[in-house]
Length: 301
Image 1 (cartoon, rainbow, N blue to C red):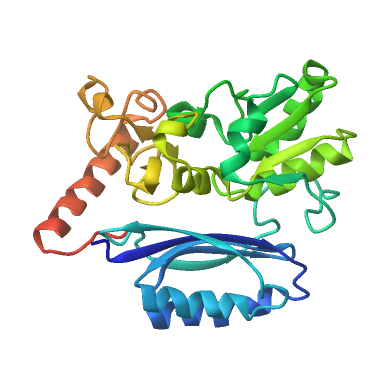
Image 2 (cartoon, helix red, strand yellow; image 1 turned 60 degrees about the horizontal axis):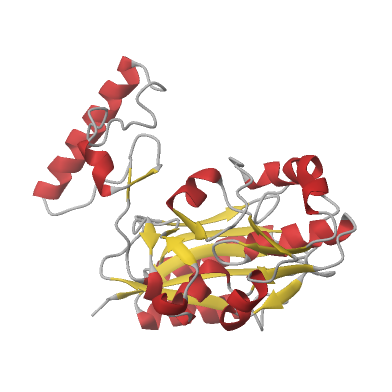
């Protein structure tokens, strides 16, 4: 049985003083042995944390006690091993960076669509399906027929939309992302741009993979997640991908057989981006990782 609960969460609310919340929240997580990352900004909270059921419940209760967070929702999956090395509560300007000061998900967002109704919506001829995630996430999995904006960061989405919006004239727009947070902003942004019919997948891809059977699914591939599991598939089971520890990009099993791959040092995606001095540093780091394994500990660096 899986020992650790992995809780992905976000909530948009107006914190008057988000900086004052950092230390108490860090203390609760540390006391419970919960690890992961939480982002605090004036606009709310976002993050993924992992711990035992008891410890996670204590931290979730602490988050619900924050101003405006009593009804926040979260999504759970499970891991046999702790998927994070440390716990960090960070202060940010935005909990998901779009760079559009006028965007306010607490004002209004697109129409939520439950996972069970998603297939019916996106099968309709007047609906355009847009993946709001980054290019490396889209590459390992997406919905059949989805438009890929080929963005390297979410902050590029507004410019992409302005350049491509004429392609979607008189269409209804359906958007999706990993857990739903990016769509809170992207749907608000499109409404502000004058798009009238905007929809997004409630709970994101993670909730879809949890609730919709593989037999009835239109999802193709796996879903990238931001922890040591790297990807998940239907039923939120751990996927086949691993990370390149040099560039942090996901690698399929066949990528390890490529001539460019050197464990902990380089892969086909980054072999030309690091000079030899940096590769030597990566080799030394990998040596320390292996030494830590022989001692039964984890190398944190």
